[in-house]
Image 1 (cartoon, rainbow, N blue to C red):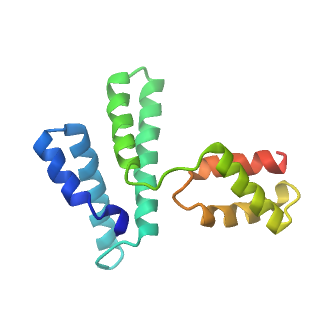
Image 2: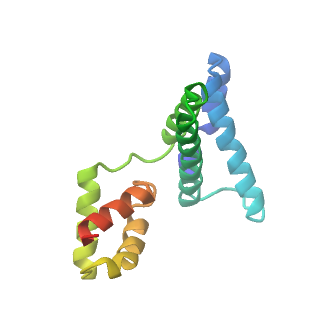
Image 3: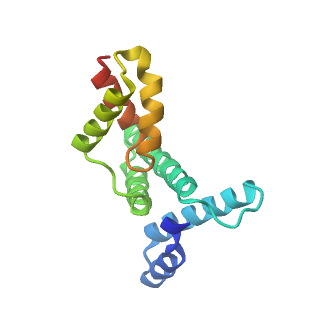
Amino acid sequence: MGILSNLGEELKNAMRSKDTVKLESLRAIKSAVLLAQTASGGSADLSDEEAIKLLQRLVKQRKDSAALYKEQNRTDLAEPEEAQAEIIEAFLPTQLSAEELAQAVNAVIQSTGASGMQDMGKVMGVVSKQLAGKAEGKRIADEVKKQLGA
């Protein structure tokens, strides 16, 4: 649980500074981690890969909620969701830039010999494993479609 190793300390700091948004975000992470640990049959720690997936899911939930609130002109509810998403993203590995993502996808397309959209699944499988936690699935899919000529 390397990427979440300082979660307890961050929680304490947020309590001391009375930062309610950060505290709420960190408690959501802790809650999700505890649920994942008990659901997986009582394993003591989550692997980094599992923790990254969990954090990505939490960020996606926050961003989806914020988008929904914005659609309904409820910026008062959207802003805290976006702030929480940013705080949770801080625990994730740094995301790849558009150029780095394009290069990684291009390399996989070259190595697999993919030639069109019929090969998208094959390319997505390899790229998703290579870039786990470094790029969102939607960004990867968009780049693969772009390069395969959708």
